[in-house]
Amino acid sequence: MANPSSSRAWRNWSGRVECRPGKFAEPKSLSELQTVVRDAAAAGKKVRVVGSGHSFTELVATDDVLITLDGMQGLVEAKPEAGEATVWAGTKLHRLNPMLDEQGLAMENLGDINVQSIAGAVSTGTHGTGMKFGNIATQAIGLTLVTASGEVLELSETKDRDLFKAAQVSLGTLGVIAKVRLRLVPSYKLDYWRKKSTFTETLAKAEEWRDAHRQFEFYCFPHAEQVQLKFLDQTDAPVNVNARKKWFADVFMENFMFGAMSMVCRSFPSMCIPIARFCAGTLGFSHEINVGHKSLSTVRMVKFNEMEFAMPAERGLECVKELKEWIDREKVTVHFPIEFRYVKGDDVCISPHYGRDSAAISVHQFKGMDYKKYFDGCEAIFRNYNARPHWGKLHSLKAKDLRALYPKWDEFQRARQQLDPKGVFLTPYLKSLFVE
Image (cartoon, rainbow, N blue to C red; front, top):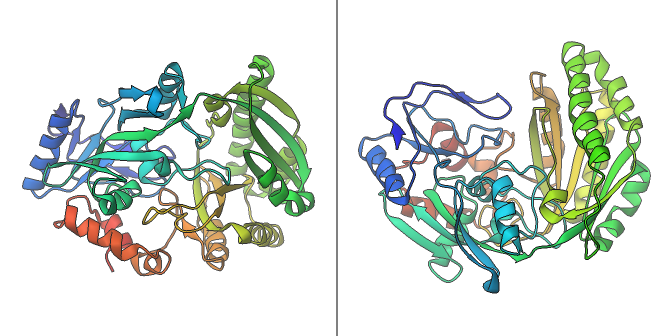
């Protein structure tokens, strides 16, 4: 069930966050999970849960008890006729989606990385793109939660709804999610086009493209005018994928080649601007028809640190224009493109998309390169647009800043106090977010 006295280090995906938990636990069942949490609480220890380590902040880090749910993966129950399924919380998305496809089911939307656990994706408000689709937490219609006392709660839209709306995006501060019940759609295929544009044209037509397609996003390169557009639309046409071309574009160019150029930038930061312009110049055209989850998922082998903020959708283009102008004017040493996506608003207490359709803008810096000055400048711009940070990505906001951004902040805090009055799930980093 657990390594009783582990001193091995844990690191997140980018390598920025490291901790040495006193105990590393891997429960294989709900009852084992209850025991781990109950024993830790009785001993006065803090408890955190790790999925795949794709949060860039210290959400997971602890010196006490770190739980992995890798031993709790797979389908619990599928109900194709009802369009739902219950899955163990540790299930990785890249395993979950083929399982659902075998049942004739699919998640309506995904982010572009599929290695996270379903619980981690739900808890941090991970999202894809498309104005018709909320973040992944909105696809959860029920949660099985193990509280700090070891009690099991079944939460849903119809059972303890206030607690459920708080728990959907909760960063693991209300308890450990053991199972997730998902609202699903029939399996589908996507017609995926990748095209090149200019930044000027993209600003002029982005809202038109957004409304004309199931999903739309774009990547604009710093120090260059070129933009990569992505369009996805549902189709009944047969799967049509050129495996060699796809490998060349997605693996060789976007990972091996881009990774090599990133290492040059890390060694010689002055090369960031010419390399960004070179990468922008290599943008091209591609087209495929594939199973939905395969088109939505992207191979990400080049490691980076990331910041993302979500602002009202109608202000997104204005913000990305100001952001790019600042990067170009200040000659910021960055070569990663800026990512721009749309997300439907929701009613989840501390979801970054609560109460409003959003534009989500992400910025990245290669692992090992100094990101602080760049991210500080980006954050200053984002905050002028009433933007909210992605919970799993880097930002400097504290509890007093966050309170002003979330109309349901007090409701969330009441739920947290009710379910974890002693702060079993509250590390120093999380206290900085939730305790003023």
